[in-house]
Amino acid sequence: MTKTRTKPAKAPYHHGDLRKALLEAAEQELTEKGIEAFSLRGVAKRAGVSHAAPAHHFKDTSALLTALAALAAERFYTAMKDRQAQATPDPHAQFIASGLGYIDFALANPGLFKLMFGSERPDSDDPELVRHATNGFMVLVKDVADMTARNPLEHDDGRLDVAAAWSIVHGIANLLVAGRGFVLKPLLDRDRDATLERLIDRATPPSFRQRQRK
Amino acid sequence: MTKTRTKPAKAPYHHGDLRKALLEAAEQELTEKGIEAFSLRGVAKRAGVSHAAPAHHFKDTSALLTALAALAAERFYTAMKDRQAQATPDPHAQFIASGLGYIDFALANPGLFKLMFGSERPDSDDPELVRHATNGFMVLVKDVADMTARNPLEHDDGRLDVAAAWSIVHGIANLLVAGRGFVLKPLLDRDRDATLERLIDRATPPSFRQRQRK
DNA sequence: AGATCAATTTTTACGATGTCAAGATTGCGG
DNA sequence: CCGCAATCTTGACATCGTAAAAATTGATCT
Image (tube, rainbow over all chains, first blue to last red; front, side, top):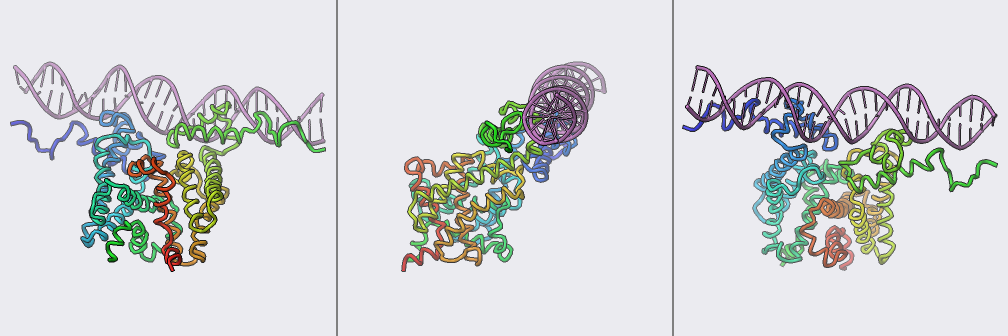
């Protein structure tokens, strides 16, 4: 036999699974302190280890934040998919739903959202991070593809459709997270999803609207 | 006589005008290192003074960044106005022009832009900062007002128009500054302004389009 | 089982940072 | 010309990220 122990899957040495614990502690630290006051020693303290312990699991702070960003990107993807799962299957509804999921995630996890899009500390070339980020991007691309009935990345109008959709959703998310949502505040308080839907709809590909009309 | 000396306007004691020099040094530091690696001691070094000198002009780093953000907001405002000045005076052209100015500024000053919208280090309640930021916001509000022929802040549809316009422009700016502009890259390289115009136009108030059509 | 070895963690140390307190410098008003 | 307050420097302290050296512990081999 090899080594099928009592422990769950692959229980490392002293701690249990320090790598995982560090990532959880890092998310806490990020949520409470924000990216700009994020401290590696603070993370170590939360995880109950010495300040130099993280070094054996993450080369440096940047590496830890990169791994955390990859995790965030994965959850970001599922936030969109979840929203889509509970929506009508027609292309337009799916388009709106992924946008709502995008904004959902940003509002529920402002720290992670800023880490992904507003920080230069994670290594944006990291393959794992790129993989998950691309997945999220592809959700949007597929939405547009389903509405326009062709691959948007293969012609200029399509690229414009994608850029418009991404921009407006990203803009809303950013403004809300940055505390500049005052214009929308009253409307959102009355009916959040309806207002966001009306906003996102402005980025619906014009070609789709025409197609619908005839 | 009072004190009309040889020096330009109001030459303080030792340095000349350290406050101003610090702000200029801070902008340099911000541009070169980015907000996340910004260092007060680095600023002092650039200005050629000791590391504790800034304390007499700015309570702490946050105060310095607040003053810098206020300066940035002022320039941001003029970037929009400048663009508008060299555009056709009709409402729609003015609307597009301010959006182009918005994005112009972000691309030309990514550091300042991130300081204004992506950092929590400046004190967002500072009266001077609020004043300049509001001026910028009001440009957009006026654009929408001119197109819809009423005050957008006084009814829901108007607020939505403003939010849509701000969101898409802000989203484009953010994505480009964050290095996620790859979808647009080829189009922008071919004709920057035309591409951005087509994008921004998607946030043109629907009521204006109707009005134009009849 | 016991010894060895490598993976993991802690301890210690160094340079850099922001901020505070004390001292030194300098120009202005009497 | 003298004092004084504004300005700047020096020195100190706590905190931070990171590297190297010691210590601990689990796994593997015989």
